[in-house]
Length: 349
Image (tube, rainbow, N blue to C red; front, side, top):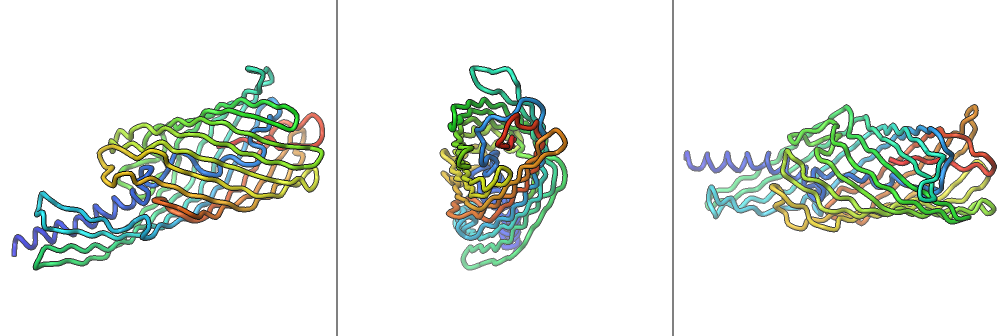
């Protein structure tokens, strides 16, 4: 009877550990199911040069995602330290929500650098995120068996990491090009023992290129920005997320000098597998696609230019990553354009 109690307690403890693990592996591809890159951060007119001087943007971001059996599917574990015949099967699902505010001051230099326009910015995050995992564990060691269902939840409110960015943009008539580099300074609210976090717990660096076609005469616009993320090892968990590739795009039509409507989308694909102490699931790479509508308004604010944009994304085709929807409401203030037509100076991240 004592031996049975030991095995039952071990299996019950495994449920708690397993639920915590699944919360993280809800996409273990990218530790804790959270990538450095926030898909959708770039959009229309991303590569179009702006006006020199200070600018400030605020972004309200809401996301609601869930992951079912395709992500948190059953995992067969052999608990060799207890008994090689003890089979444990864990099936869990996750639901997560976040309401975040991004605060983004930026400065665009008037003096050209390498023939392009240099801009620097620093983004900070404040807000709330929550996560709930429901799981069922079954364990068998003939002739005994165990079935247990449990649920754990967590939420956190506070500050996230800091995200510096530097970009160079070039204009050649209707064609605009950019290159950028950004990264993560891990100072946000983070604990490896929580389901929900506002910080990553590790640093990261990301770089890429972008293109914008914008014809003021016709009002046609198309933008695409692509890049790669390298994640550093989390010193707390000794876990390192793989290399990620991302593509953000936006297409719009100016129906007037002040109003644009269009579509947005993104592709996110993990290229290399995670590694480290907790990467027990092998090449559990993540992927997701998304698309949705957008609308933008440009208007004067004193001697500045205001820009308000609302866009939303519905995700699909996710693998090893939660799937759902997200919405962005962006308001920015920047130096007014010197001549019509008005064009929003967008800051990102």
